[in-house]
Image (tube, rainbow, N blue to C red):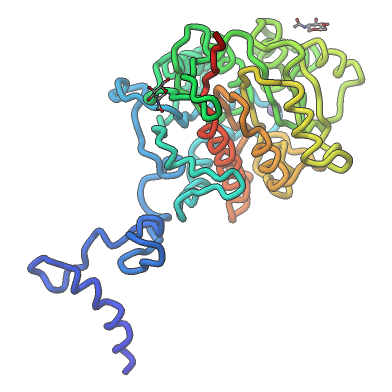
Length: 397
Ligand SMILES: *[C@@H]1O[C@H](CO)[C@@H](O)[C@H](O)[C@H]1NC(C)=O
Ligand SMILES: *[C@@H]1O[C@H](CO)[C@@H](O)[C@H](O)[C@H]1NC(C)=O
Ligand SMILES: [Mn+2]
């Protein structure tokens, strides 16, 4: 009696097998639940392959976009930038890309349908890939920053795999919002310390011109080099607290229509906010979650960026260290993972041209992978919002 039940369980597999070897279990039996042929079809469907296999973001196909697969077109690519040699406190974000990929393994376990946004970003018809990492030297920051800019540009300046289609409301054909009128793909970069956003914005500028930025972070990152780091050398002046200062000086950011969210850092003094204003940013303090709530914060962001093309940069330290401890410069008093995810879903309908998540330093994570899981889930919301809104506009005649 004790071995009767297990034998019964194996029976369907044995019967389904058409080979000659009666003892051989078919290799195709490990599938994700969403691959069942009909709802509730549990025969030959198990979910255990979620912890096996080669790790890419959300188990998307790995395409060597910067190497031998450079002719393979895509619509949205995940791309690692493993750089952490311009960080002020805890190093380790060079392991961010591999950590976030590991944290993302369960993303499409049940198929990936996003209930509140009513979209399945993995089945939207767009071609999603993981391009692996940009080769980044850990020995020379100037060289590394150029590598990141060139790697990102090489992908961004390509043409997307899918056409834009027609506007869902008017049925009019959509026209790309880029400067050259080409439908370019979108890139979601996995950092890396926040310095990578300077070369990323240089790349974005080459395709979209000055861009509105939505920036979630506990820190301003617009500090003048004399204030943040003291600038003992030209290279030291470019770091993860000053890159937005330089981006603003270079004219990469659209003045007045960019905004920070989740700010709660201490300052060198009130002058830091004056400097931040001059860099072109509006601000939402982390504590405003207690007064205006997520809906008030979403409204402020949407008012600021309007319907302009927007770049989204997410520092994992915008989330409270209770939920995301593994980061370069943690600050208490932050948003919960749930709150940030709600706010990101509130960006539905915006033209997010590309995005990043930075400052994930997995060495400081818990054994439960809290931070890398939060980073992956945050990107799932970003991906969902992106797949819902093509980067096109209707041209009125
Ligand atoms: C878009 O609209 C055009 C007519 O303006 C039509 O010919 C075409 O089939 C439509 N494309 C899609 C994807 O619906
Ligand atoms: C942005 O605009 C503000 C207000 O008009 C101005 O003070 C500031 O210098 C501008 N910043 C840049 C970088 O152009
Ligand atoms: Mn930052």
